Each structure stands twice: as C-alpha cells, then as structure tokens.
Length: 185
Image 1: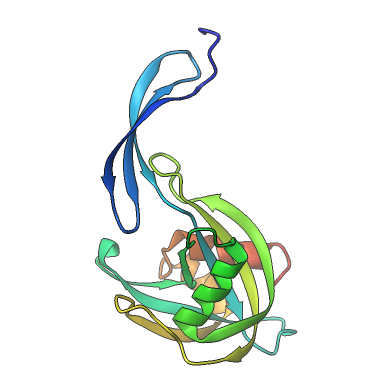
Image 2: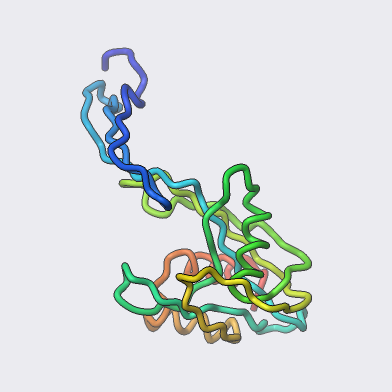
C-alpha cells in the first residue's frame, strides 16, 4: 500500500444527458494501484409500494404499474418510482411520483431502506418507501410514461416474484422487504 486512501484521483465528464451523466474517473484502488472507471452519475430516486385501504388486512392490496420500458424491450410490473429533482427530499419524491403515476395520495409514508441499483457502474441510490393510500385523484403522467395501474394482493405479488413475472429489482426489494419484516402478510 502507498499510504494513500482509496478514492477518486480525477474525474472527466464525457457526456451530460437529461437523466444521467457519464464520467471517466481515475481512481486509487485499495491496493494502492490506480485505474480508470466509467461511472454513470444519477441524482437518485425514490420508489413506493402503495398499500390500499383497508390497511389492516392480513393480505393487503398493493398498486403496481405495468409500464413500457425501452431498455427491457417491453413492459414490466413495477412499483411507482422516479428521479429526485434538484434539492428534493426522497420522501417528497416518493409522494410526488405516487400521485403522478397512479393518482394515489399517501397518508402515512414509511422509509424502508435505501439501496444502490448497480454499484459496478453507477452511483444511483434508490430510496424505498411503503405508502398507506388515503385517497385517489387524477394521475399526472409525463408524456413518455405509458402506464396501466392495477391492484394486486401482496400474496399475488410475491408469487409473481417467485415465478419471474416481476423482474424489476426495486419492486422485488420493496415487496420482499415489506412482507419479510412483518409490515404485510
């Protein structure tokens, strides 16, 4: 070891986009050597598992969205989610995305955990929430969001995960976390 701590030596921005930026970082590794890594920079996101009334059932109903995803070459069943706006708190983002994508309004909102999406090449972290829905309004989707909203019993969502019908990572973590830590079922 050289005595220098691991970390960034230099950063060079090679692309600035609407959603992500791409940097090439020169980094010092834990063994003291240096190298270059491509890093996708992302502002972070929030995702939310909406729990429908009544909120006291043994197998609560949850809302999922069926959304077209170009990168997945089709549609995916997902929890509502979206990027943090500059200066926006993760909780505010979760509430905003829930209402924009589904029309649902959360009363109680509980932060469950925060995860890195793909730490091998991006710094994106997604904040995961459970939301207890108290009312519904008209959704306010963006022009590029092609979404169908559907309620499912949590037990059906867990079965869809088991059988591979749900493959979206944030949704899998949300549902398993919610069910596994006694918050549902």
